[in-house]
Length: 344
Image (tube, rainbow, N blue to C red):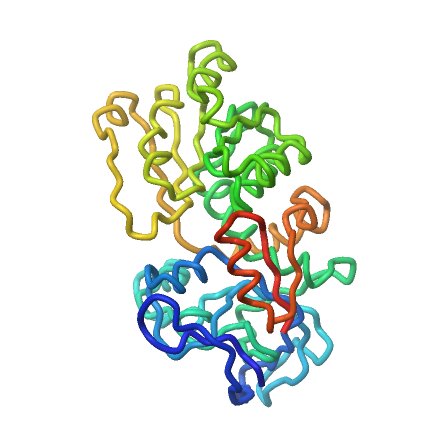
């Protein structure tokens, strides 16, 4: 089968290869991948700034149809439409696994970087990580369940949007736009999202079309001053850092009221960050660092997309065959795309 493979360590080293079709184990199913989203992690892997074990098929945001079930599989059948949590190879024995945190088990090796992923026609998958998607949901929409589940975990379950919160989202990429929609759906009284001149043509434009309350180009307006004006000088209740840009991370305490919260989502790609620790201490801020998704976030994410609380179609700007992966990766890097979905 044709697959997109990170062939070896180093910058680049990604190519289409003919790979063997996977054979499901007795407790696994074989899924025909119908749609798979390109994540920022895939871009980090291309640039050699995220852990991975080559040669490995990329891709962990996927939706598909079960085409074969293992001998020991119960409750799943051929034809089921599914998405899958990327928590493969978690040991099930360590303290983290035993306390329900398999997503950060040190033995975990997720599809797309630790084991073969979804940028291929088929992927074999353990059934305990599967979730059904409704018949009304397209596979392209379902490819956004995984990033939406990240926001559900990070923002709704951990940092917790409270009713009437004023929320600031830094970074208007796909994750930032999902965060803005999720915050409003959870009861925020207003959401501000910030970006730069480079975001204006697509990302900030999309934020306005989605009805985000305050869309700010920080190269044309002072977003901190605007935040203070909109909150009568008190400051925001919650900042969601989705950009991974060191200057944005540095600015997070400036937006916040005392006893405010920072929800850290974006990865820097190993760039150094300066952070005013004393400012955060003085304001008695709470910082939530996040990585991956909880079990409970997945069905909630599916529901939010199915109900239109998260508009997956508005965020998906490119749907491409796998053979055009370079076009998709380039569109993400030059910011002419939001979410790119590949169809193996």
